[in-house]
Length: 266
Length: 365
Ligand SMILES: Nc1ncnc2c1ncn2[C@@H]1O[C@H](COP(=O)(O)OP(=O)(O)OP(=O)(O)O)[C@@H](O)[C@H]1O
Ligand SMILES: [Mg+2]
Image (cartoon, rainbow over all chains, first blue to last red; front, side, top):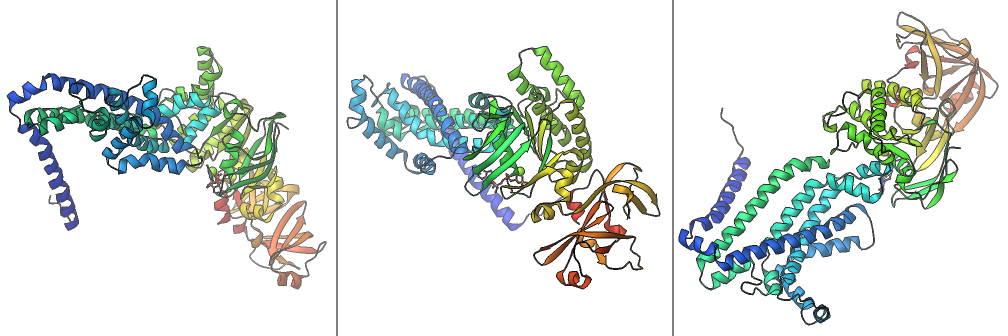
């Protein structure tokens, strides 16, 4: 059977094909270029192992904090009306729109020796050029994305589920734990994955706040930048490959898990 | 008074509930009617505690519960779209509220089994709610709300999403279950049958205001407000029974042996039915006349009301109050006045026999 396609169909489908294929080639190219020797050497180098460990540990911690803050924030945006709500929502969306590096500068200012820095120093807390700084930078970069996803997730959870639970004798907190969270499970998982991916991929803000010190605060994305500027292509590409693999795992989990669970939201 | 709502006012910005007064005795069954957007759902959810009134009070058994948290009120709610918890099976859904009240697993199980049998869902207990039919879902939702033996059961258009046969089946079922589980009930409905077969009380809500509350027959036979009459759409409603049926005509005997002829056929002989005649289908005359019209009755005018550009006439025939509507010029022509004798004529097609499945809508067609 021959399927007749309209012109619009053909053009649109072609566009989707060409550019997706192009993107695939672009991503794939980093797997082709490195020499196997160079790759093996750099992947087990101290720099790469340290960067990988640092990236994963800071990102997981940051993502965890993001979720802890994003869930109540998104829930209150979705359920309650309160003064300045729309302004708060816009402020939270700002970092999505403006360059990450601006956020980095701002964090550097506030935690540097101008505002909060000296005060925190007195308490024995160092932020600038430390792993704490990295986590803070990742936190602020990823938070808006998590809030956005969770906001629409909670909007999809019919508040009547909560009403029914309350009317059957469960208090607000119990209802949130027993009904709201399980019904939002798919969205919570999806936003965790996106958050984690965003934390892992952060570059400019982490470089400015963390300082990118060799073997100390050098994350994978910073390692790409350093090695590339030193002409160390193999190491740069190795770091890129690690990032791509991590992203693939994240996307795979997202597709698999979110599809299974998002239906329950109804 | 078991439930007493006094001057309840809720402000939702665009929409306001205004000075709602409503009272119910224990085990009353109230059907709340009103057009879409009139605030029926908001009223139920305010009674359940999800909206805070800025004025007025709600008393339950004399106790002020206006500011009590929803979970402390013992008021359960059933929605049109069921809202069964998708992360629990049927049994767990029903058990949800009971587990909060009771620890004894065996007791919980036996209570659930008992109610599930009454609602005929005992074979579905380990099913996932998504796999149920609409009627099964709604029976599960009702079981979940009823199992905790609530002070008040609120039902927001519980049957609206179901087909007519399922509605009729559920209505009967609810009637039986209510006998067993003595419960005070407020039921929002658009369906005439719900009112007729379930309600002891009717309340009418329009634009956030309760227009009328009272016994079903009182509200429908003496609408206190034009709106109620409009909403009900049928002013002449009588209880009766079909005593004879032949050649496509049913003879319905109503109060004091008055017999009306209807072209509706009805198979259940001697079963109680309701008949309805729309006021505008009644023709008034000073003398009987020869025609094909099957119903011609003589009565006495008991009331004449001028409402807008129309004249409403109430006529007593053997203790049955008939209402008709004519123009002022016809009224003048016939010399309509209180205490005058008058003939009423209406075709048998216009005498509607209401049985289980008629809704307001079908009556108004
Ligand atoms: N949470 C809310 N905030 C603001 N307005 C609301 C809210 N809930 C309902 N309303 C408004 O209150 C009015 C009454 O709504 P309600 O749902 O009570 O109507 P209803 O009588 O139940 O209608 P229907 O028969 O269509 O269910 C509507 O205009 C609705 O938009
Ligand atoms: Mg409603």
